[in-house]
Image (tube, rainbow, N blue to C red; front, top):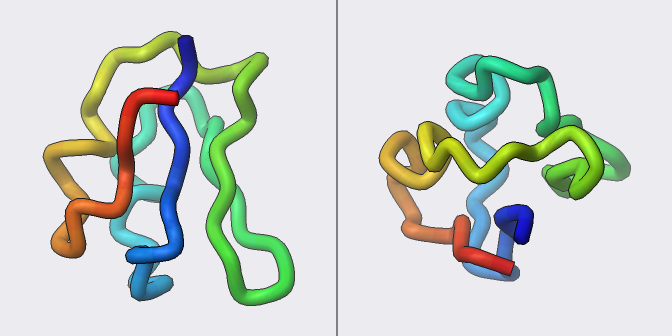
Length: 56
């Protein structure tokens, strides 16, 4: 099950550079995780200062 970015996201972009699979992208000011590319490694969760990334 892929991770998801919640409404608590502050759009800082830290998670994008931390994702080893480039599964996170920005669209219209919101960051999203591509569920097909995400392997649940959890690196993004630890990097999020707003705790906005949760298991989906």
